[in-house]
Image (cartoon, rainbow, N blue to C red):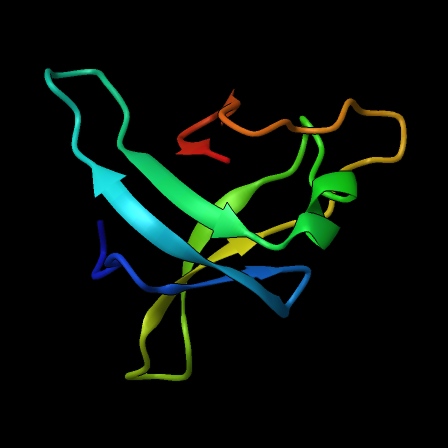
Length: 89
């Protein structure tokens, strides 16, 4: 997971918005890694079905964190427990 660990920062639109609770490895080939995050309630209206999550690094040698983009206004909200790509909110 490129150095990402439980307790890592989660940023939505570049603003600290939560933490990584846990990372579940896949049970078999072809399955995805699941990152479970605790996010501020304020993010529930801006994270949409088309939001993208990526693992980023702070500076050259910094800590790893999850970055989530804002979604499009016309897309559905992501609810608690929803799987979206390789991450779960």
